[in-house]
Length: 280
Image 1: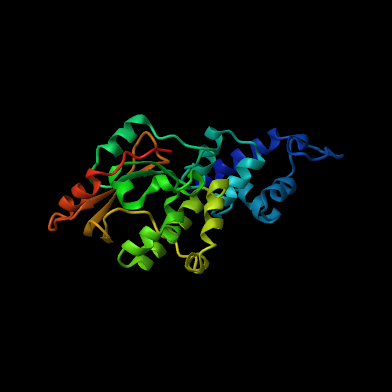
Image 2: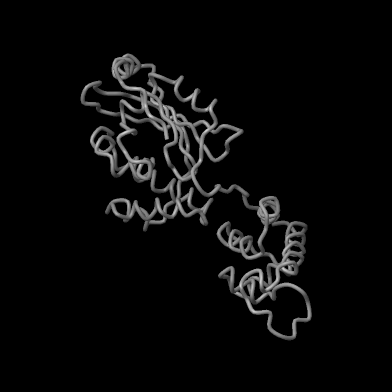
């Protein structure tokens, strides 16, 4: 953070601390309050940070708060969405957040997903929940056979027999997914569904061990995958990730056939009789 950012953040925190009364956060007003609002000690306690550390933050000291800490301070100070984003930006952090509750993909994104047939394609939200998919994805992974609470890309990497059995070098891909889930959690540490996904992953010994390694990976495209499907045969694919500008919490994943193979023909045959998926 630059000096200008630190000073602006310090002033912002002091101003908004003064706007929150003890009653707003369930505290007794107490006696001898010389100024309105919460004390620094109370903000630190409610946000789960050290008093000295928080005092330095309000003094514009050269410290770098994490997204988790900023989220806790935002909750404590009762910040609105715009105020929260402003605080994150002043602190040099990405103000990205997830809306609690089910997410519905835009209709045009669903149409784009369906149009990718026979290439498998599906839409994930920031929690890795699968929201929409096409016939190609249904033919490969049978998403519709999983209940909604388990239809999660990270969970299925470990729970789905199809993914384990058909994906060449499954362990390497699954380990990378665990690192990507960690990165997703750091962006949205307050999201309860994200915490639930991590809890479910720990039921699998491999995932639990890899989570404990604390490795973090960015979710990127261009990853080569080879699948050995029991009826379609060997499929050589590149994983493409598209991020729609009007839905920043969503990603469209497409498995694109390698041009130097007959994978496209195999996918066409595989999806020819596949049922239309029932979307989330």
